[in-house]
Length: 412
Image 1 (cartoon, helix red, strand yellow):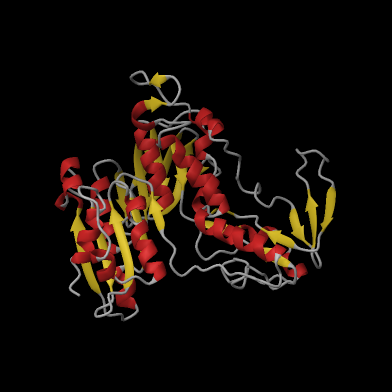
Image 2 (cartoon, rainbow, N blue to C red):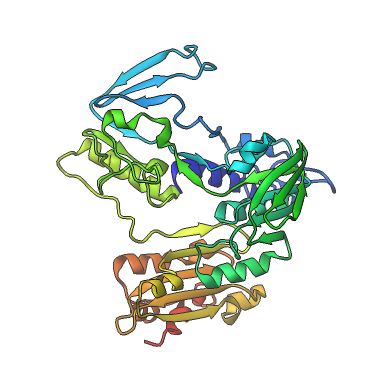
């Protein structure tokens, strides 16, 4: 994930997992089981994870790039310096001020309280009824977190499925699975927010309403480039606001690099980590530059069930006019999955006919982010599906056999 999403998602997820800040299945890491009806202290969980605020303005607050390789920074009045301007000059500068949540007009215009993924893990206690605007991976992960704490969850999403960017099989099956956990208002858009703090009323485009005591906005993020005077430094941006960089993370201004949300085409923390490694090397070794490759970036959604993917989706292949084969295997078809009594997990691989070149892979089920890694390795290093399936030993009865079986299911 990218720098802002790391603090936002990695730390937001942490209370859902074991370890510091654990509220999984009604337990806390310190203090034992929660009493029946008790509400977890999410603010304390946030403190234990070392979370810092990333609200609107926190990332890149008061920063302005001025001239050539110089930064003009106006400090927040609440910080030391009382708002005085500070000029910082350097031979090289890295722009890494991240991004922030998008907040739709009806929410802003209402003037009523709302949370985002930057703020929701700092609340004192989970709401009784949480309404989530948005149906992407941030919305899905936080819905899972709050459902585990006992909140009733309603998701309002304009598309007909959740996780719209996932492979069609994944998004359809995931949406069907979570219908029993959440109230889903799909193919609906928000038109107004009314009520009062703690008793909100969301009006949707079909005239229906959603009553909740808290609203979480999770419809996307945008880069903080509009809070910088980039034009003065000769730093160009894409139409969506991302800073333009070359493969070495160099901006259009000499001596200025960028990384993370502010420029990356893939807003994930492990991508930002790689970009940071590239920038650090290139700052130190200007005559031996290395590049960041965004061609095959794996991603995961930490929900129940977990989801992981790499490469093309089936709809991508159709849209690009590619010839492709599909291989699938269910968790319940291998010994470990059968022992788990898993009836919904699966692995799906897409490969090029004849060559067996892996085009994409998608897994839904327990440990999906771990299971996908062998497919990430093969796709990255050019190992074809047949070689991957038949050359190495696959441990029995490990869950990795679901990957092996999906590969063998390809008609190569």
